[in-house]
Image (cartoon, rainbow, N blue to C red; front, side):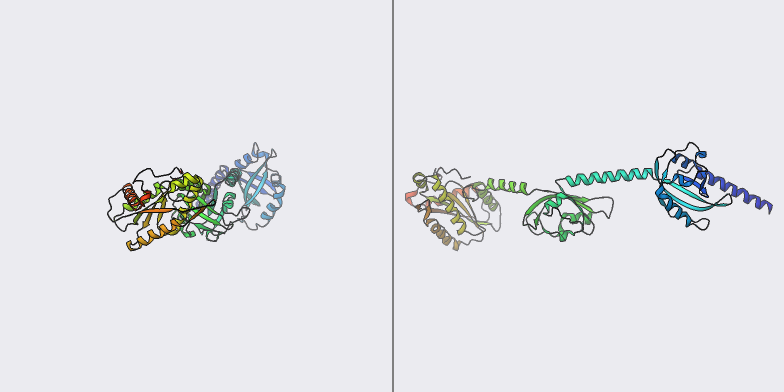
Length: 444
């Protein structure tokens, strides 16, 4: 039995030595205070308090090293420890170093026995690195927030449920909600209507950001529109991606630029390149392009017939009344042509007083003679321009298309020109392809 007791004492001593070694080498500070005074301190707390040796702090009141505002809460915590082994909840506090500096720490107090008397052992974790990291993160977040708030690009963060987590001022301006707050608003409930690139309604579930949330896919350079509450329509070029790609619960971030003016200017340039500036009709290049597309179709021709229209005696209007009146006559003729044709028909000005009409594939041959007659009648109605009563007749050449037509657009145009010449009254014959065009320079 004595050997067993001896072995037990040896084991207890070894365990105590191991615990002492562990405490001495711990990166966390460990102190024991009894009766309010420090009776033990490990090397880590000696360094933390700025002492040169453990003797510099032993025997001193524990409250000497605690910030005044933290003393009361500390004493309240340890007063609640009743039985040996009871531990307090982790608590943050500020320690006062010997040099007067401060250090933020997290502490846990345990009621223990020290040399056969009740004492409190405190484990102290230095929060300096954590505080430094938190400060750096706050600065980074503040910097990020400042940068995002100054961007001309709209930025919106959308959570997994389709609600706005954050939105920058540029996005609020673009949405027509400057000075307001849309945080917490579902995309489907925004005070605006979403549009696809063609101006058709776009549901929130079909918007690319919904696809990003569903699949994690990054989608770049898509175009969508918004009809705002103030009646403005804005066109946006956007991208969407996950805010934290490695997190399956990550929200999505949508960023976009307002391209309304750019889109309008591009469309204006496209319009100017394909339309006659005087009449607003399609110009020669656009009409021939449409005709080429029709000739390239083997079945169900979108264009059934081509009409070549020439104004008889128009040159004399320019010569006697001037080009300004001649321009007015051309504009009125263009309006009459548009009113006399269907929406699917294409009418263009291809020369000074020459117009080309592409009748849609829905035109039946039996209706063609009636249409030509109506066009002539419309052209023959008197035109009042700057006090002048002007009478204009039109010669119309008709060329039908048929499936498998092998002609080029230029060949069809030539055939229609010949047909027009043959339909022209004898007094106005100038020969097919001759220089009949007056010097109105607005034709494209």
